[in-house]
Length: 342
Image 1 (tube, one colour):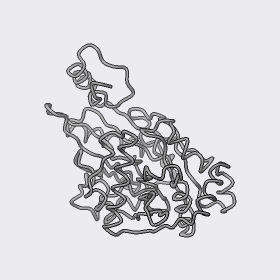
Image 2 (cartoon, one colour; image 1 turned 90 degrees about the vertical axis):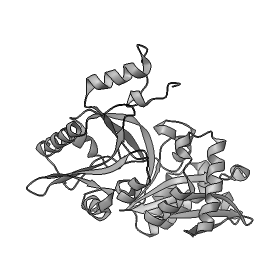
Image 3 (cartoon, one colour; image 1 turned 90 degrees about the horizontal axis):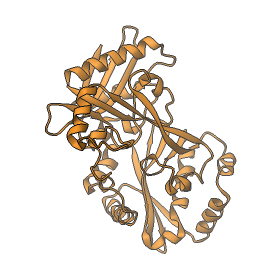
Image 4 (tube, one colour; image 1 turned 135 degrees about the horizontal axis):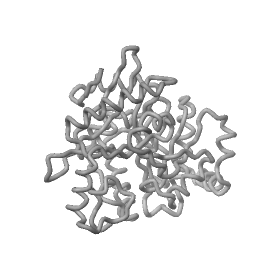
């Protein structure tokens, strides 16, 4: 059985997701509803013995053509399964159903960001297109004893956290609209400072809806009664994600995020969560952001993406229409959606 589930049936979507062996908030219907770049769909396959696989996607129109492609929401998504030791035949049956769906919807290409904590995703999609190793992410194993977690901290990180504690910082875990608005101002100030791309400038409504519909909370840190930084973090199925974080420019010298993420680690370990995933660099790159995150843990995970061209001839035509005979050598996928200035 193969079915396409829309966000109009959020209960069914989430019921399927929560029946899988592993999942995160990125897979939920509510999170997909926050992305306006395509139509959210959950592609769900179940065989006669009850084995199931699913792939959340964004179905996107390729402007000016009768074709579509498949994208992925911001974050770590990828396919899911309820099988502990699935055989190759289960993967291939799922892939066959996907190809049929792609034919029906005139899909040119498909792209998905994979979840670094779910190693089985590569096996599900490996024979269909290719799975690319992009870079590393940092993760704290909250199941380890407290002392072992702290031993993985960089020495400079421990010193900074101790200095911040001596400054009597206070924190507030909140979901109030006033606190959300205060964090939005800090977040946008932060994004402007680092010259972030437009995709990171979320609307106010995005933050409101996120906290209202996703298993999440906002942690704000204060110094001398002023907000110095905050982190919008999630707790889903044993996994904690620091989804959006920002420090106020005025207090960058304090490096408040070190204190904030350490505090999140402490409170979520007490809740018996399994992992605190800090993520990687901007766009998955090995940059200063990843270097900062790597101070918290020696456990690094591989971040991968899945890329598949379903209609090669059409894909080539789209490249020619966009770039003529001078197609740039870029890793961006699908390349026909790359900016001309890249």
